[in-house]
Image (cartoon, rainbow, N blue to C red; front, side, top):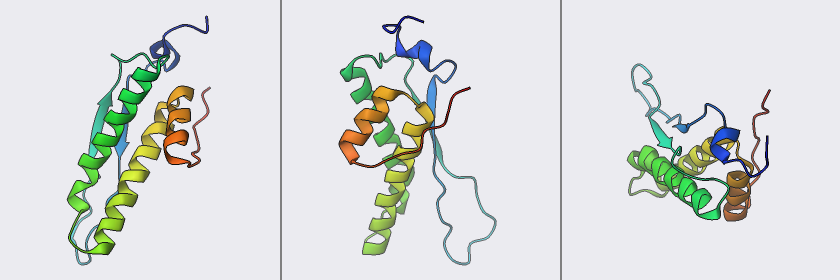
Amino acid sequence: MPRNLNMKAAVGSALCAMLSVSLSAPAGAGEPTEAPRRVVKFADLDLNHGAGVAELYARIRAAARDVCEPLIASDLASAIGARACVAQAIERAVAEVNAPQLTSYYLAKTRRAITVAQRD
């Protein structure tokens, strides 16, 4: 495969990253509910260019905030939990996309390490 091939082909059938965040249920809650999920589409982006990578990261970040925003409350513990939720959702989505350019962008923005799934 030529190296300059659009990143869409490199990610194969993964045309969207799924953000799936497990939210902790409040004490005394009944049946656990399915974790909120947001689909982040990026088939329209060229991840071989910085602008495409930055746009995908912005979409992932916005979706993570959307998923985790209900956790935000007036107390400090809830605010810290919401921040951790956003960080975990972004990390999970970046790892799932498994695109070197996005991973590099994420690492530069956050200075965090992530575990990326191996492709067969």
